[in-house]
Length: 108
Length: 117
Image (cartoon, chains in turn cyan, yellow):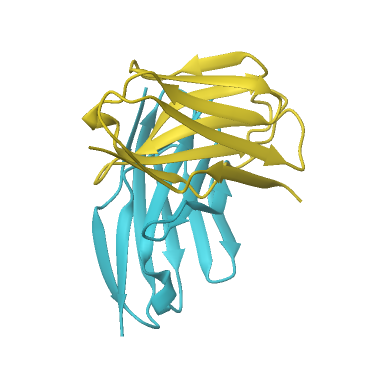
């Protein structure tokens, strides 16, 4: 089975940098995804990691360490619109299992 | 480009009534299709997935069922709704070819917010 842990809530200030961590235990691993979900909306795809290291995509970066079962999402130059829930998801043998999400609140 | 349509956006149904939610995908063939549910304060829970017409895998025991009558159509149904069926239902698709496309992300529809009263 899969077990995914991430903090429930985080707060940060506009313009700052925030790191959202995710740890996982899985019986099979075929990649880790990060999604953003605004309140009342569907999740949207942010990033994908399957090899160790950092993937950068604009203001967002995602890191993976398979040996540690650990990933983080790094958000730079925070904007008010970044206030959302961030979901960590692990691809097992056949399906994607989601964590409960981290609610990020960005304040002025 | 690929698009996914899911309807209705919101639904209020009494306990014991039937349910039918429909999802269609355009712009791709032989997608993998999924139904997820997100209850208040909980994560996304996978309910069903399908790799082809008539092929349905169920992840959790429940009073819901799914069908895939056409390649790009996925339907979620119930004969009698329970209060616990309330939640945000999301249809999603990913690249096909079984699960070879490991890096193909899920693309979600806009969701259906179901309230069972």
